[in-house]
Image (cartoon, rainbow, N blue to C red):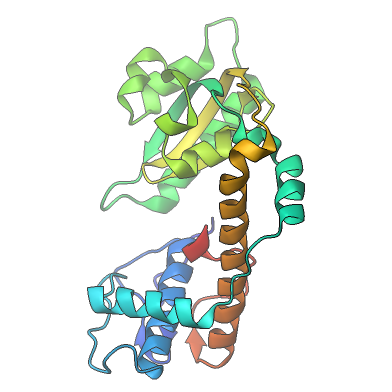
Length: 260
């Protein structure tokens, strides 16, 4: 996640930020994508031309509803076939394990209002590199020491220990990085969540029970629908961006924040 300079970014002359804001590249792209869709909804007659401009990236309720209607009309999302569902299940079977548990500890670098995100990320990266490079030494457990010293989570007092968790115990964006994997140890990269940046160590895993395909076909089909929607949305946003005047933000990345 790179950090953008405070320079103004615009979509068709509509500013996405102000000179006092420092946004990470993901948030800036998300604002740009939302503004492209808001303007497209106006152009399609689904939203009044006097819809208020977003304030700090927040659009009006009417704009949110109009964008939803626009996407429902413009995006063609095919229903996944039985064969596609079975292939996806075979490739990602671990994601559907029932009862998977992971024993974790973490160091949380919390993102709070007014925090210097650049400096925060630098501290988190430095902590991650140190823990992966050195691990425990004769003076004691370095991970627990780092958690007690640096973590913004109450678990820091206990060395960052979170105990045994299931995916349901975690924020979805956190769970996606942890569950359905095989490795243990300090993860190679920071885990991003709504709470901030996490240095995570997996202490142990219990894989859970692998259900039969028939038991999870609905969930598999929904996953494929979401993937198809994400692909269609990326393509639609690229079309909108090509027809717009885009300044100060790159929209040709493979990942689209709106559908992560």
